[in-house]
Length: 188
Image 1 (cartoon, rainbow, N blue to C red):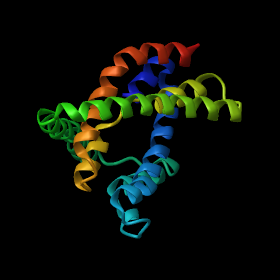
Image 2 (image 1 turned 135 degrees about the vertical axis):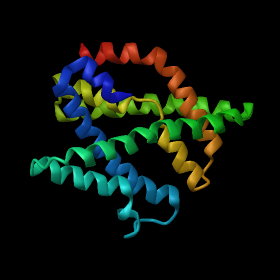
Image 3 (image 1 turned 45 degrees about the vertical axis):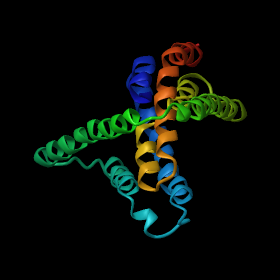
Image 4 (image 1 turned 90 degrees about the horizontal axis):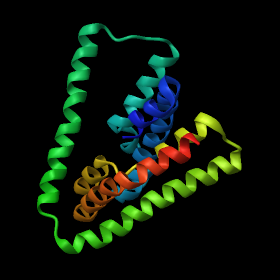
């Protein structure tokens, strides 16, 4: 959700910055975050995660200006386009089985996630003196609702997937109120 918002707010330059921020966040989440969730700590196996490998390949392609052949780009694009609907279907199944007692903690953690993300992004920007478009991108990207892939990780490692599903649902619902305010602050 953050990428199209950054594109809307700041154009192509904002999207490029948002992609860089997302790449950094993904590397942290799928290395240290995965080490915590899996309970396995940092291991060689962890660094063989497809997300981390794809980030390294993407960086190499950008640095050396390598373009995929059209047939390979189309194939990878089609496979990538399937991921979001598959994650949403999986989340939908979990939400259909959501119990009322999961909503309270889910809502509390959703508020905590949105508030903490904004507060930390604001603090980082203040400490580093970040202004303008970069500040806006950092604020937007850091204050997004809980991503669906967090549910998939919770499901995979049996770490409270029902609560994470509630967090995804509640933070997304809250974003209908918070996103206009966030855009106002980020673009101000």
